[in-house]
Length: 70
Image (cartoon, rainbow, N blue to C red; front, side):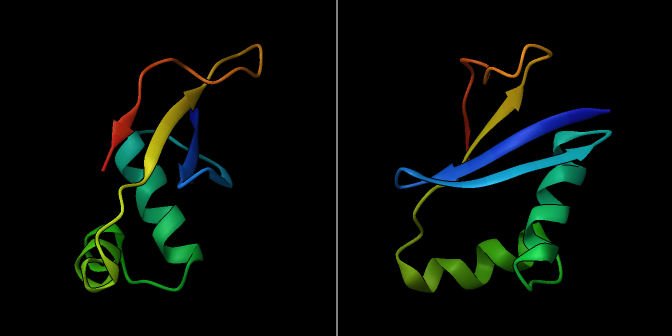
């Protein structure tokens, strides 16, 4: 299981753990009140479509350098 950190516009939304990044994205969206990640992205587009940065949390607690901006 991996842990992923979600942030946007310098706001840290926290960490979600899942077997895959896609599962973590769905958990993040569900906790925010959406049906799924796709549902959140479709509805969020009406607010300007700001991207969410997703980084894997490494074993030492640091965030990976790789950003999946979606």
